[in-house]
Image 1: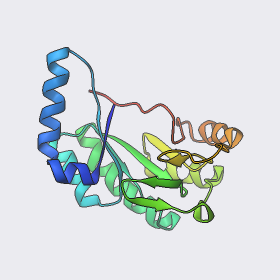
Image 2 (image 1 turned 45 degrees about the vertical axis):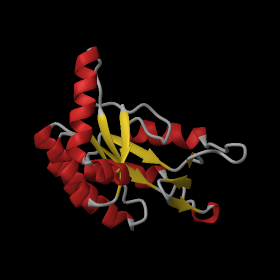
Image 3 (image 1 turned 180 degrees about the vertical axis):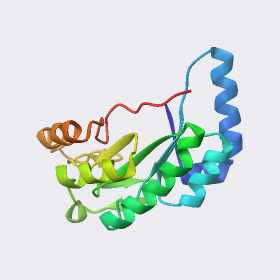
Image 4 (image 1 turned 90 degrees about the vertical axis):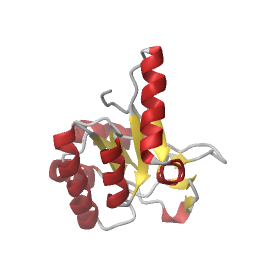
Length: 170
């Protein structure tokens, strides 16, 4: 899996990235998945889908649960006919990635109830949740809530987490 930020995709070009990854993967006969990561712009996600990305993440973690569900559902509905994998995010994960930062006091842990509702109403393939992981480099000791992660995975029937197994097709 090759994860690309929206900033990188816009700078280099969505189609160029797809063509480059596809060419390299084909030349080495390596299965790949090109994933647009942490994107909160539905138009940018649509651009990635049209260019040939095989997986996208709609990050509505900064929205209310209802808005996040509604927007994620739109992305899933666009992706299904194209056989594109969709990841959603629920809860605010701390740290910094691609110029976006979440302060420690703003971290909002994902509940089992919210995760269950989110997966049921959106039908996402993958779910990134807030269980104590951070984006970017750890500056201290990680305080990952493994029991919360296990409970969410069991309740939703989805592999969940920020450092979990992405799955998608070539």
